[in-house]
Length: 528
Image 1 (spheres, rainbow, N blue to C red):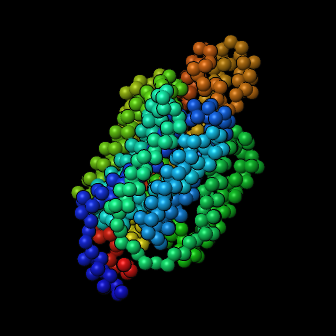
Image 2: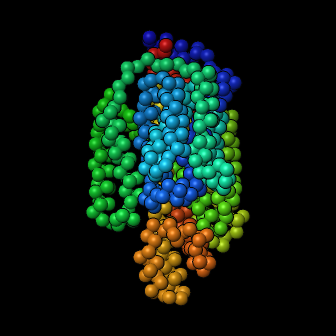
């Protein structure tokens, strides 16, 4: 087929109607919602889960980290496969894996078994994140994609911030129990599988399948080492130590090897020619900061309301509604405006300003901050996050051909997940250290002085008994609440600095007019 014939065929190819697109989106977004929900629904339930399964603090961390790690390292692999194979087959496989992982997690009777099930869930989540972007990119031209990407961004944002609320309600409901935090995801995933089987029909590009196995291994190791390092650093060994040097040095070495391999293979998992493009490179930088806000906010705000302010798990979830509403309206509203006017950079800039401002406000909170002030910060952060998340992907998709949509979209999702995973671990470590320092200072100025501070420094190194405030003596419980509340602001200041970096990055992105065709008409395509 000649380039001219391909161009004519692409122009003449019938576009999907609004109804046909919505039929696809119903199944796709249902699966995506359950996948994203599973990543945060356990945050308020984890204390109960670990206590019931008699797990340790390290295992507590890994229940969260394992799924994020699996999601991060698998995203580029799924994305590349979507450029080489049937997207419908792959998304059905990802949903099936997710259902199996969720069922196994609900049946877990030991923490290692639960962690293994969470890894399976994470692998499926990586597939759903990458494939959802690729399917929308393959079905809808960029000029019309904003409104539908807005729906996706809203679903992701709402699922992320509502997870702690749903998890808290389940745990606080005596006749359900924590196992339903995993079981609740299964029915909706099965429904999405049925809907996609019925309505998802996309053109299949005929290409020889070549899997970059060496690149997959190197990328996985490169992404895993920093996550493992920030998980154990500060607990099992010092941040500045020979163990830290091994982790950091290993990540750098494997990263260089991964770049060398991806630069030479015929079908790279992460197409460097795309990543080198100005738009993609800047979008990746911005996406990492958005990932820190998206994953970190739901986790640490829930803990702030429960530990520092004394609310129940359900109440803590309800108090994050401003962030949920902001994310929803920011994503849907920006998506509608992009589709109507064809301009997208202005919404990235506005989102970056609002995200930085919201995190900056949250950086000032302590254990006495009025709720309206905290709510304002959450609202601004939510709007900014919603405006940026999907428009960053849209900006990248608009610069590449349909044959590279999967890999390019997955690259942005990969770095967003990587930023979120590393950000959660680093911010958690900073928070734990700051809480401990504030508590020691409080004890030093109280009865017992230095002797009490020494006992606090030596005991409860994992912080579990100290943060179980409901079972502490009143005076100590109040000290824990004050320390935790006053320490939370620091981690949001760090997140605000990351958001400022993302704002600077989007300022330098060059706005390219959104094309009205799925494929770039100057490149040949082999259609069925």
